[in-house]
Image: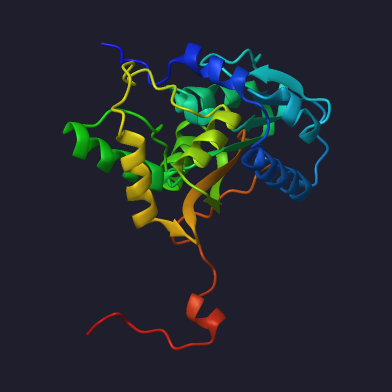
Length: 270
């Protein structure tokens, strides 16, 4: 039996179309990080591709890249690209491993994949405040904030997708808002409001967001406002190649660590 979808992609497309561009700070920070990583690679990529829901924002990050629209099935041909940048949209995928596999198949040998996406700590304060308020008012919970994966899980996905030399790391940004309504305004401007397929369609209780705002202020204050965490995870992997460095076989070392450190090696017995 197939799993029900996580994302209502019609709602997601509507939210993205309404994004007004006044709160692109997460994308701008991610773009800067991706550009730094491309500089560190020190390689000229001649057949890049860019997976993004916001090409007007990202296209200059990878000049000359083929723009690939975000979706569950990516229109990528096999062995077509030496670089793929997947830009801030993997978190809405129902099948992130499938997305990475599609990218892996589209890479030539020793081609690079760079992924940027919001991580599991993003908006954990909002999730906690809304959850507590809803339990108090209704006795239950409804899906209101997208669940996101952590660094360890996402690093494992690179290996499952068949990518070599996987690396996963994070950046965290704490943003101060005047109140919950101010935070919600930025999320709408980003096109990142609730597009979960399982979300409740009915109107929420009148007091829900006022109660959540009070809980938020008490639990996560910042000056005279509230603090919101935005975490971005960056994934780097390579299509396998015989030219890439390989790990040594266990037991094949030719020198002792104790000698390198200039210390006395203990025998491990007590």
